[in-house]
Image 1 (cartoon, helix red, strand yellow):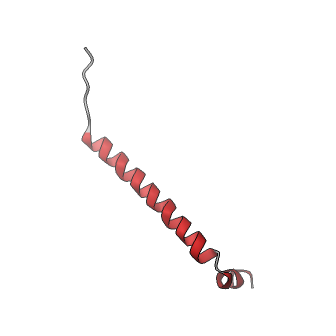
Image 2 (tube, helix red, strand yellow):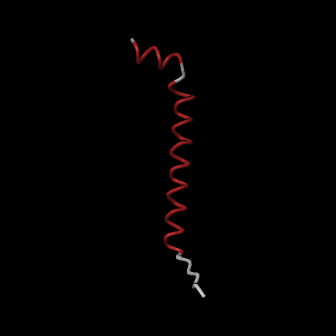
Image 3 (cartoon, one colour):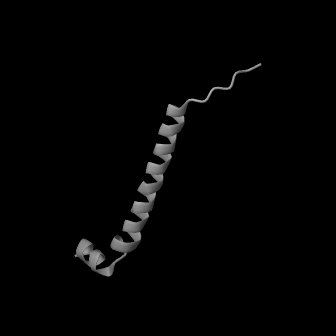
Length: 47
């Protein structure tokens, strides 16, 4: 019969990594839609 083992450390670190990646994309999306899409920022970048 195969033994089933559960390693809490690997599961916890994977969960933290997934959450960090999710927040990275959420913050990046927020910055893109609210700051880089602003006409004043576009004018400053291209002038």
